[in-house]
Each structure stands twice: as C-alpha cells, then as structure tokens.
Image 1 (cartoon, helix red, strand yellow):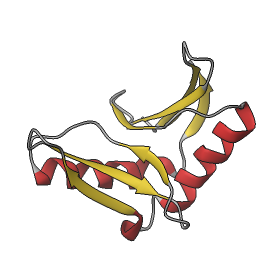
Image 2 (cartoon, rainbow, N blue to C red):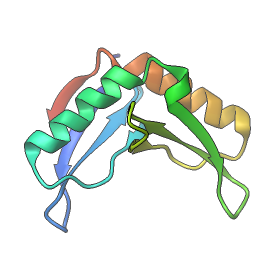
Image 3 (cartoon, one colour):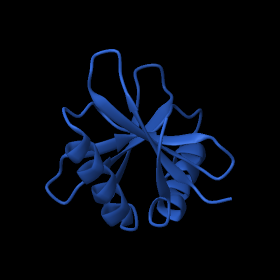
Length: 109
C-alpha cells in the first residue's frame, strides 16, 4: 500500500499535514500553515526534497531519543519525525519518508 499525505485543520485554526507510510504509521509531520495553499506547497516541498539525503538531519533530544527533520533547499524545516530510541530507527525513518513521499496521494483527514 502506498503512502499518503493527510491534511487536517488544527484546533488553532492552522492547516497541518502528516505523511503516513503504507502501513498507516505517521512518519513525518508538519508545522502549522495559515492557508490551504501554503500546506499544499509544504507537501510539494517534501516531495521535492525527500529524495535528497542531504536534506535530512538526525538530531538528539534532551532525553537521548533521536528524531529527524527534513529541510527545504533554503534550510527551512518542512517536516519532523516521531522520536526514535536509536540512530538506526532514525535512519530507517528517513528512508521511509524518501520511499513514500514522491508518489504519496493527498487526502483530507
């Protein structure tokens, strides 16, 4: 089953997207956007940049768990992962985003 981007509106009135893998697991989530066109542009940016491993950055949280961010060409964060217990989990998450983003369909929550 293919991945998909799911767009939803938050309680704060902003638009968000998540990228779900074929198994339904959320593998990337966005920050809030003020409009539908902005969230759509964010999704296009993920699709454009997810194939470039240099756009991913693995980071360590204060509690020692790891996560990654995906950056656009201008260095701006366009998505963030869940927390992982290990570096290998973080790297596998990045690969999953790269595999799923390009062909993922876009749906409403």
